[in-house]
Amino acid sequence: MVIQMDFNIKVSTHPIVCYETESIYEVAKKMKQYDIGFIPVANKKKQIIGVMTDRDIVTRALSNQEKKSCKIQDYMTKHVYSIEKDKKITDTIEKMKKEKVTRLLVTDQKKLVGIISLFDLMKEKDAKLIFDVLKDIKRKETIVQIDTKIDDFYL
Image (cartoon, rainbow, N blue to C red):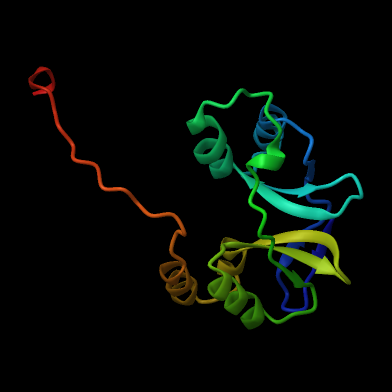
C-alpha cells in the first residue's frame, strides 16, 4: 500500500518498526529480511522514541564489542524528525537540510504513516538540488585522521 503525499511523492505505508526491548541481532535480522537500513523504534505504548540505523548497529554497538543480545534502547538514535504528510516538497527538503538528516518519518496527525528519504525526493526534484542538500548535510561525528603505515610484507 502506498500513500500519496501532498507533493506527489509516493511513500510506503506500514513501515517496519522495532521495539526498544529488541536485541541488536533481532533488529539486524529485520533489516536484512526487508532490505532496509533504517527502522523506527517504539516503546511499549507504541510511541516512536527513536530510530535504529545499520550505522548505529555497527558504530555504536558492534564496534564496542557488545553482544548481539544487547538491547537497542542504548544504541538507537534518539533524535527523531518527522514531517506531516500534507507538507510541500520544499518544506521536506528544508527540514532535512536544517536537521542534517536524509530521512524523515511521515506522520498524519502525529501518527506514523511512512518514511521518506532524500533519495525518494530525487525522483521528483532536480538532482542538483538534492546533491546540494547532501553536500550541506555533514556527519555529526568527527572523522579521525589515521596515520597509515604499510609493512614491507605488503609491498
